[in-house]
Amino acid sequence: YGRNFQEQLKLANELQKQREMLLADAGLTSLEMSKSVGLEDHTPHLLNVCYDPELNGCLIYFLRRGVPCTMGSDRSNTISLKGLGMLPHMLEIHNVDNCQVVLHYKSGRVLLNGRLVGDESKDTTSVAKAVLCHNDRIIAGHAFCFRLVI
Image (cartoon, rainbow, N blue to C red; front, top):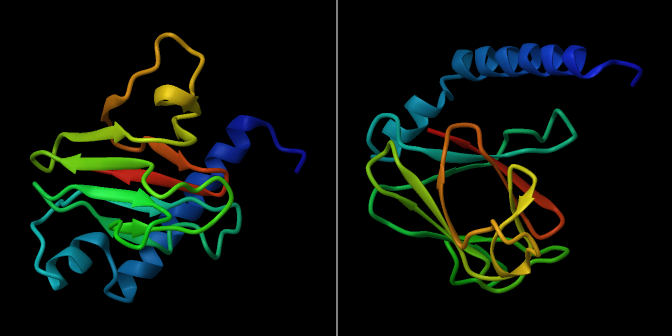
């Protein structure tokens, strides 16, 4: 508390570098993890974002090329999450070629970089499909936030 935005951003970047160094020392870089489960190098993935530094980045969901990744509360989803505002089928993410990742809105409260996506939005510029970029933030429901790493 009491820090301006630039100081908070600098601190967050320093903590991220420390976390990456500790994971690398333990042999847990995203590149090593993807190789260990038989995925291609540089496979895009989602990392959880959390206010608690101990929980931030501890969940990783790899987005396999050509295999849709679904998110919602239903157990049939690739990423099944229970919590406030979660509906059975909320979104679908497609890894086209390990460089292009596309989000398809299905239902419920889904935010992309803080803006509502799809039918729930009153914004006339909202879309049900979006091409994602590195470090985009996806919020599903009211409790789950993920950062895309491409």
